[in-house]
Amino acid sequence: MAKSAETEHPVKAVGWASRDTSGVMSPFNFSRRATGERDVQFKVLYCGVCHSDLHMIKNEWGFTHYPIVPGHEIVGIVTEVGSKVEKVKVGDKVGVGCLVGSCRQCDQCSNDLENYCSKQILTYSMPYLDGTITYGGYSDLMVADEHFIIQWPENLPMDKGAPLLCAGITTYSPLRYYGLDKPDLNVGVVGLGGLGHVAVKFAKAFGTRVTVISTSLSKKKEALENLGADDFLVSRDNEEMAVAAGTLDGIIDTVSATHPLLPLLSLLKPHGKLIMVGAPEKPLELPVFPLLSGRKSISGSGIGGLKETQEMVDFAAKHNILPDVEMIPIDYVNTAMERLLKSDVKYRFVIDVAGSLKSD
Image (cartoon, rainbow, N blue to C red; front, side, top):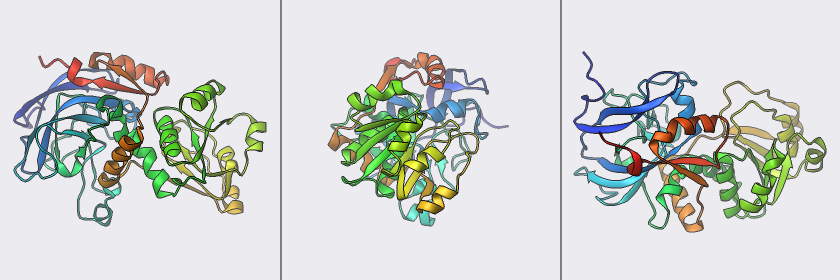
């Protein structure tokens, strides 16, 4: 008979879990593995709430293991390290993002692209190497292999900075990989939510000219005055879009809802790139003619490897890039999910785990 989540490992832990497709979360007692020779145990201080968490607690992507403790934007303080750990010591500030495992042997892993390893292990709701299911950061403590630990910069606030571990790397990586990180370029950002607002901040830090593209005129002032974007386009305004046609070198599309790609492709210069980082549930229509006529491309990008994630948080610390967050106690998380579904947050919820999670 399989052991329960509470007894399968020796270290007692407590978190908040969803137990079925309703997605409703409540307190959950479980256990973490003992700290192995290359493991780092840390006390969770804060954890960001990602849109992926909402999809996963409701099993909208079809691979959720219940009960599920979500959270993959996790920061805290090291409480114990294994005998062979070299990267961090007790008392250090650390983070864990979307991954806690990969094969460490394939071409992707060898090139610091663990995020594209076919055997990657997500931070929550996936079988780990020992066969037990991983649990995320809506919990009091974490244990992870040191390879998947991010060293947290001393001058980067942990509460506001936590969402960088998913929203940050998801937008930083494509800007870098596709060469949209140079001062003379014009970069578009579609959608001004948790991902989009961070994309604007990174693109501006790289020195590019940034155009925010949104369906909602109400976000114009926020984009231009608070986030520092240079231009704003309402994607439903055909006249505005026509004037801006052929002006952008690349576009980061952060939208997770079904939306037309043709208007976005029209904004690109010849050889321009439309990079998808949002994850719509249903297939999008692919217009081929604009790709042929302008040698334009549509591609995707998913989070980033550990080396690049470390580079990203160091860059964020150097340039003072922080997501805009709303701090919440953990017992507010169900309400937060309802608000997230309605896009009623500017722009990322962060749970004050250490300050609100009760261990009884």
